[in-house]
Length: 263
Image (cartoon, rainbow, N blue to C red; front, side, top):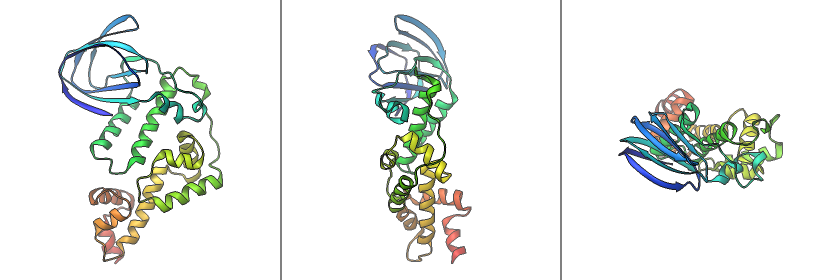
């Protein structure tokens, strides 16, 4: 994902997209003209306009400027690996859309961009969860596969697999955990893992990791030899500002106030 601010009007010659390409216009209103699959089109693009161009798409494009955009590319294999029923496929075909409006894609891309702009203070697990949510939404809404072929989930994760994952999280929650490694540990696709983990624990993997960090931070705050900032970092938070924000949201008071009340 990258963002581009105040891009002047451009003429992009004929080219092919080797990856799935998602372009969100966040500022500026322009007149765009594009040619794809031998046909030419034009439209007025305003903030919220999305280009969804599957891998293999060939096009050329011109627009007046300036505009500010967020651009996201996805390797074709990312989508197929995300879903249990498509894990055997090399790739999943998406449908082409120009001048698309979709508030779900927009909100997920803005959340991903905000996380990157902030330096991913919650670690990679949060951003990867957002990326997976976007990938699954694209599969279900904009892929050419049978929309009724979605997996139906019931119950929870097998106890042995769940305990294996929980033990790993409990021992490593202060580290930057990855969604893919947790799913691999459970022996299932990321999507299947997310569904069954929540069914079993009542929370997402990211929420569970946060809970572990908060509980450990409470223990560290009871140690007067540790500063509030050190207690947060030791529990896995990126810095004191992020620690204070999350702690207050989860506990209802700041770490400083919690320490004074506990003492």
